[in-house]
Image 1 (cartoon, rainbow, N blue to C red):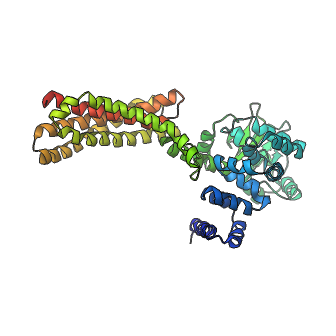
Image 2: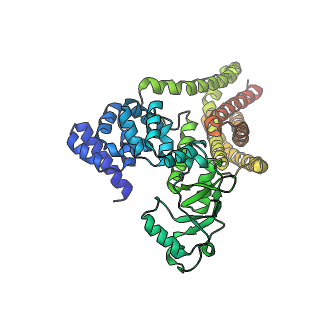
Image 3: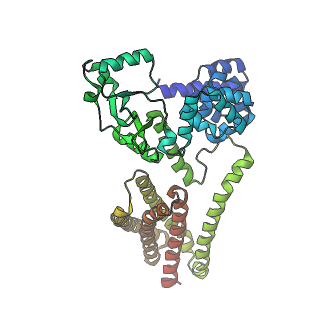
Length: 449
């Protein structure tokens, strides 16, 4: 059984124990779970059981569990915790994890946490908090191990033995000069296998990536993917080493970006609580439903303007969903590809013309092929070539329009600093419905009415 399958089995057994009310076995199972698994369990049960599970969590693990939770669930639990319990949970966290949590703590708790930290850790926390959360500076941890270039590998090894342990996910040491300016890295494998008398500078990787603290998080994740990094240095404007970013933080960014794309297309928050109350869930979805209702009225207005045509040729009413559906699907395919390309940095205005031509060509070819198919079906269904021709023409026009809108709208939204994943789908649907209906009914009015 794979690790993922085993985890699902354990979580499933725990949910069954909670449903059955057998709390003692459930408590033992909770104690055996990793903090991330406990967080998943908390997000997977209704609020009443959620509070029950939280009471089973070891106080020493509460901070780690809180960091793993989605914002809405985390805030729900924080609101129920006593100040002393929150201070104790926060004190167990590493600086980068504490930076993620401290903004959601009550001010009095935050002050107590800061007072409980030594001066060095307070400075490290202040450094991380001085940068936006979705930047390299906000992602970094300041627990770096640095060495000088003018010492031997043997000296570094002796230093590491005296130190006793290394920060988690350390694959290399950072090399700096006397002013703490970043020079590059030396891999742990070189330290272990290299000549002990060799200088660190002779084993220096001066081309190792250096990340500016203002770099957006999505660019950091792309760099880690492209270069297969485990860790990377964050270097300030004067070349000084500020901290490091590790792969576990980047995985969180990648997961959040994936969730954002999926949830935004449905108008939902990135970390929507699946088991949130009825009223809060209703309130969050009202705006998006209202926007979609407005776009539906726009399409309905187009149809209403051809009311007379529909009365004379009722067959067009039956065929309208075909045109709208084909245009919507084709446009969604294009929009999805363009949004993905924008996220990966593959799509810019400089290559938009080629992409537009390509998508229009694909839409036109698909439109012609499917126009023949639906035309043949229409002839069999209604026994007239005129309606078949009108339906095929409307479908071709709508697929061409869908390709055009699918390329241009995400690019325009990105230029306006609007998230394409949030708005492009609604705009696309409005265009394809209105253009599809107007073309079908307009040609019907012209040739049949």
